[in-house]
Length: 242
Ligand code: ZN
Image (cartoon, rainbow, N blue to C red; front, side):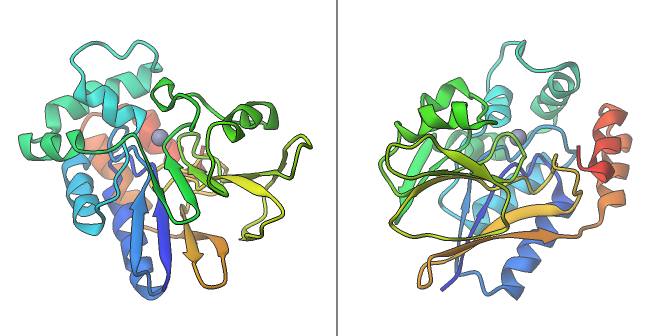
């Protein structure tokens, strides 16, 4: 039995398809989506469809949420906002209906799943350092909370009452000595300097969690963004992973 957790696809069909192919190679039996199916990339409808066929556990991200609203997403930067308007226009009624069914948070086994933070999930807070993570540890009771949102794969560890620490290891054996807050990285727009799609595998028997990086047809995804007249910056950033 192998589980896969993936997040932040952002309308990047090429990256998502490569990751789904990798699921098959890795023998993935269950997958879980942590939010932001759309926004930035040029294939929102295809990504919503693929995700909805893959898994019943689908969480809402802040971009998904913004696309479903009618007002201007003023807390987004200029490129993200342009992509939200573009996606609203491109989204089919069918995809919009599916997106509306996405949940805010969910638990499964040892895991609490949420897009941004278990502390007030609909505030879409960014957890980037141990100080911000400390708050989050008080807001879930499971051994592990998995998040996406920042597109930065990293792991916060909390043992007893000691302040939590942060690591960038690519493999984690869960044990009962500590609790963890794990950012699973981004499939469609990694921002840790590695342009390959990122997701996390989990073996419930050994309790081993590990990151996977998958090469995909990046130039095809860039070409789609340019042809869709989305901001050129959104195509350029994919190849540097920023
Ligand atoms: Zn995102």
